[in-house]
Image 1: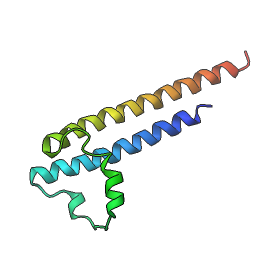
Image 2: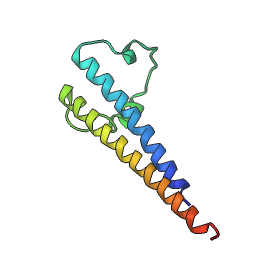
Image 3: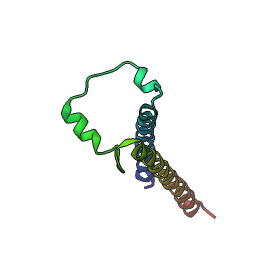
Length: 102
């Protein structure tokens, strides 16, 4: 019963973490210092994939200010997903208490 809650929370944590990493790489790039993401092996990404992925980044405004805002936004998305995970854990424990014989 609570498995979907855990799956949703873990999915949210993973997505927020990935978007945070991309925003951090943008901040680093825009600030002028090389990042680990820029020096890593590269791959070719199609225009369609870039367009689809572009909706997840730069949620605020373009440029360094937008990248910094995205970092903060992803921090809160990550924390929100952790709260969902915590709530699922509490719900699981309470459901377990309900079915324990007394």
